[in-house]
Image (cartoon, rainbow, N blue to C red; front, side, top):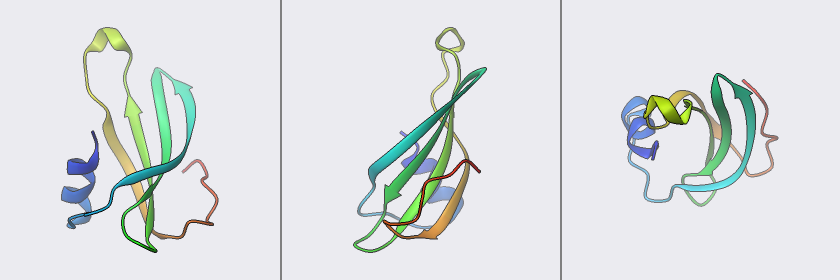
Length: 77
């Protein structure tokens, strides 16, 4: 659901966009930290906010880190 937001902000088009791993942090909603494969050897880490259900808002891309590998640890950022 956040692929178009990432592609727009990173000024790229991803043929591959596969979530590999994720962590959550409960705030006033849920913050997701997601490792996403975007090519054979390239990965990005996404920080995505999902508001509480009664707010009826979709997930929002808060921040991202590019230039990651499959072995880079997924950390809070």
